[in-house]
Amino acid sequence: MKSRRPLVAANWKMNGTRAENARWLEAFLDAPPACDTVVCAPYVFLLQVAQGLSGLDAQAGAQDCSDRAPGAWTGEVCAEMLLDTGVRWAIVGHSERRATFGDSDELVAAKAARALSVGVRPIVCVGETLEQREAGRTNEVVAAQLAAVLRTCSAAQLATGALAYEPVWAIGTGRTASPAQAQEVHAAIRAQLAAADAQAAGQVRLLYGGSVKPGNAAELFSQPDIDGGLIGGASLVVRDFLAICGAAN
Image 1 (tube, rainbow, N blue to C red):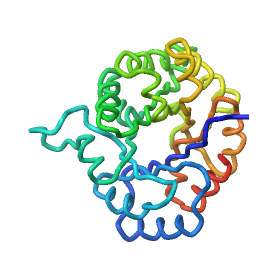
Image 2 (spheres, rainbow, N blue to C red):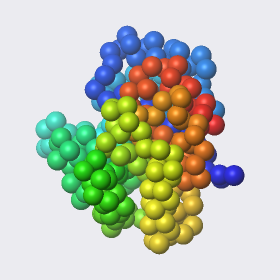
Image 3 (tube, rainbow, N blue to C red):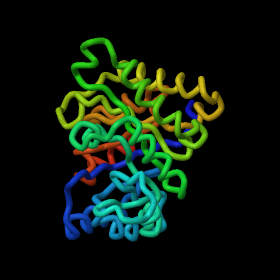
């Protein structure tokens, strides 16, 4: 039996309005899940979400975090601002940030370190493209992404946050890694962490992200090294998100 408490994080991406969010939060508050939950909203809605989740075993999360300290960085949002808004988590290294906005392995590592330095827990994302998987490079690519983070952050520090394996080919496509495929990569990630710190490796929560739905969540989450999920599209429908949280528990 797993000793790690399940964690399920919603990633709303660039969606939502204040009215839509209020309805989502109201439904969520009616039946809050028993597992740890993070709701990652766009920056402009973070205060609304943080206040709406107050008092629950659920916290607000950002979808990114600057690697910079406060200063003259127009358009950036630093970890100190997130913390001051009531945000306790931040996704870093999501595949959309890597592919579309050019976040390198080194920048992702710097963002994770910056978040940790002020007490914001990072959800560090790693994952391969379809081309990389078909070339048999999945473990190589994921290991390189994680190695960059481990050069900046210790495994013990990462245990305060989470790691999310998100195969790029399964995000928003309706395709999902099979439970066996997902477990294989999660096991490799945990082994890499164990090589750095065996005790911390057993504490780090590893999440799966990639077209998780109520219908496939239970089988994915039952794998020995999968401790929950980073949920994209399905998190926009509160009943679906709650069902996925129920599967994690």
